[in-house]
Length: 398
Image (tube, rainbow, N blue to C red; front, side, top):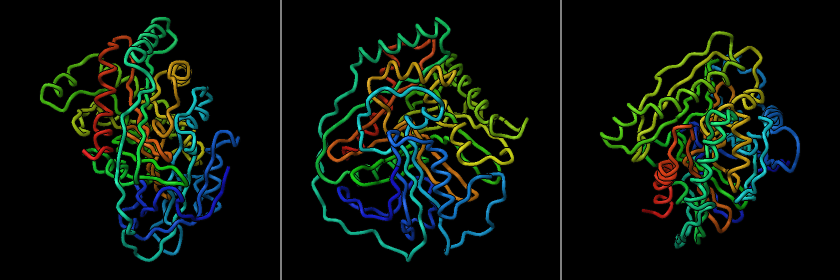
């Protein structure tokens, strides 16, 4: 574990705070106070470390059922950017993570505490030529399809009901990657658009999916499952697809169970079941699951109950994670984790789908989908390609 004070990024230019879900009115006044970096090799419990670190900097989040502060004081810490990798989430769930990480410089936990300072303008930076090379996939379409068939076989044996499979690709680059990563946040439907940077690494997010939000003593998660092209025919096909609806309902039930572990008894409800939302040129099905926070629920227990998100793991969650560890050739890196903002009275973490990362000379992207018994291997390979296409085009500047 590393606790480090404020610093300028050495190998990547510094940018104004643009963490997803940070208060818009504060973004041009935030000054970094301190940060925590943690990697799985450091040992310990990342959820407990995050809660302890925030408490040490004036943000006690050991009981999220307490009323939020009535005012946003500019003489105290504003809040903190928060990131937790998918591998760290799997550790919290007690599941294996054996695949090598394609971007090993990325931490598994980052907490950056911010104070308020004077209003700042955008820092000037010298324009550097941007070049992005060809993408190299971590598996071939044939290997991806074989993994889909392996999941279907596991479902046939009764080992799992659904498993999410994720592929990775990497491309070399030259120049400053931050403008490219920041462009992701402008993609249509990017509810959690923004960047988080560190010494030699950066993460850019265009996620539409809420992993967990806590406001006013209420919990909210918005699982997304089901994808079609954003055309009239695609919308009609998604609405009438028995396979997509069954896959979606399965994950909604999983999320209901996750929230029930940390909610007041009987308070879990489902709103807007299978609502159709748009992200870039895709339709996606989204539901909203809400609950009331149980007395004494702290940040650490919140993370243990919700990470990693059910829509990117499967059901049952631990069995699906075991299957994922056996089938995916590389780790999920910055994808399929949590990224957002944490403050007293308000936690808002997005699930890092539609996410890219830079680690010095290489950009990384990830994409996948949920596999059920009715999945077609070729269609699943095509769906993953459709999800990553807008990300890669945006990173290239198209």
